[in-house]
Figure 1 (cartoon, one colour):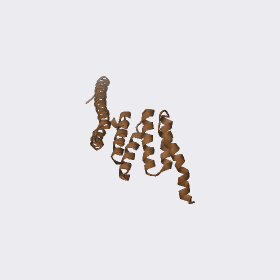
Figure 2 (figure 1 turned 180 degrees about the horizontal axis):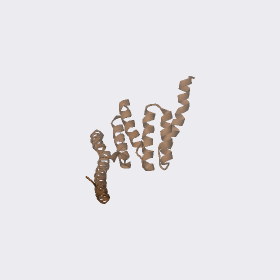
Figure 3 (figure 1 turned 90 degrees about the vertical axis):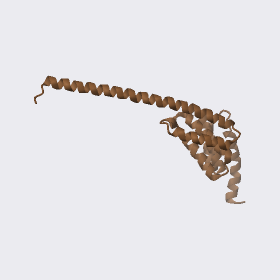
Length: 188
């Protein structure tokens, strides 16, 4: 079969046009699907914020923490939800509720630190949220007796948001505790 140059060019042009149209439709479909996912993610994040507020006001912190833990699983199923600054605030709220339940338990503190570590990794956090996460990390480190880590986290908290931050008082407490700590290690 002999194909003329003209017919070959027409065929190529048709294929290029068809591929271009398919790409355009596919691109539109991907963009629309991404927009739908963002809208659904926004709805769920707003619901999470509302539930977190209700949980903070709840009389039973245990029930509130369980509800937020379930919501955390749902948030994890939405693509991109964990990259939102609201998610970090949500994790910080969940960590606070877990702390109310029993930060005296080392296993509980590990879970709390895990939530706070995950929150710290989210990009685009406000200074206030970063300060809160660092303050809570400092408290967990202090409860573990790691004053060096506590001091580092408290300094990070002050660096993020110095206004009205209790980290300054906690740093003073650590400074007062240091001479005692050194005397205990070296003896009388």
